[in-house]
Image (tube, rainbow, N blue to C red; front, top):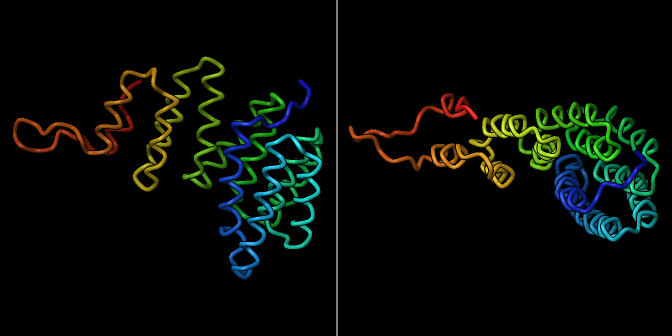
Length: 219
């Protein structure tokens, strides 16, 4: 399979990852510098979403050279892949990984690249590492579920969601992954119980089970 580019749904997710990385991985930079870099990165990302990969590469490379911000290197890797230079993109990410411990965003973009290259085993491996490193990395969970659904393995997709549920008490926005699992009749019951909206029992106590019971509900 020839490199086909990341594709618009994943590129849209990509901005949230890069935007968060500006503050998460460059807190030592002055606020004004981070704000300027964020604005320039957003423009480069817009170039990427509009299919102007060469322009995005040029802009991201300039920002990376000026600031050495991980967020800029992430966008550079994505843009390199979009102009059909996947090996250069992966090399940039691997080099970045050496300087950042537990760099979940780098894993996520590696996963996007492997996914688009149809190297699914590698994609799944790095995406699983990404969500373990950063459990609130919504795009990582989403892509893991998407791959399982594309393979018509709904049970595997559901298991990914069950794993995400374990973290949703701390990161409630993970519940929005429900949109991927409408076909599972047990799902509304799971979310209702998780949110503590189950009907009270006859004895007046809550019918909501413990969290450990919730995540074991069978598919």
